Image 1 (spheres, rainbow, N blue to C red):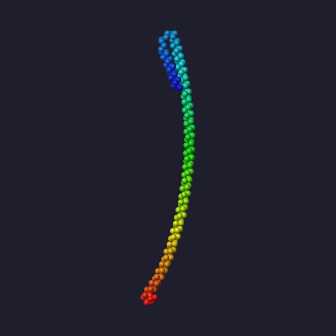
Image 2: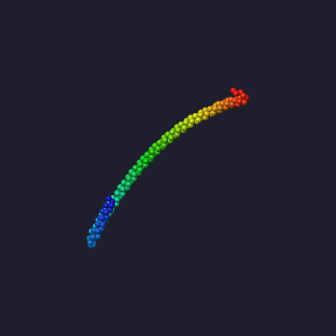
Image 3: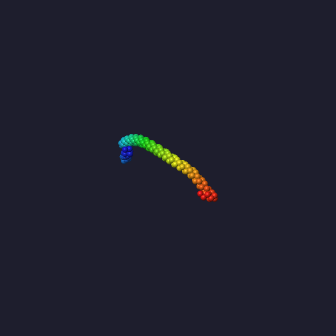
Length: 171
């Protein structure tokens, strides 16, 4: 709109200038007509420039207003988008944190259970080992006594046999 108005004013000015230059040299009385033509052209040009200026100002005001509205909408949209992103990020973090805490709790619970089972199994194994060792020690102790008695009896018997052999008691 502004550019079209400017072109119209420029063409009108050039037309008036061409018209004025094309007029033959006038006598003194004709110069009044030339002056009137020049004044009319000047007034038309001033009017055209005023309209161009007014149209340009209106166009700039509308552009400024449109730009301001666009920035306000962009700003508002950006704030909403950021708030949503922030909210969604917080929710995601809370879910991740909650899930991690649950996972750690399950891991801790599982570890505790595993240690309890290991401890219980180890205690049973130690008890069996202790019981087996104790039984083996008793058995070894008894074996020693039994063996000692058997050896003692064998020694007595062998001694008697040797004695009988030399004494002649052949019984």
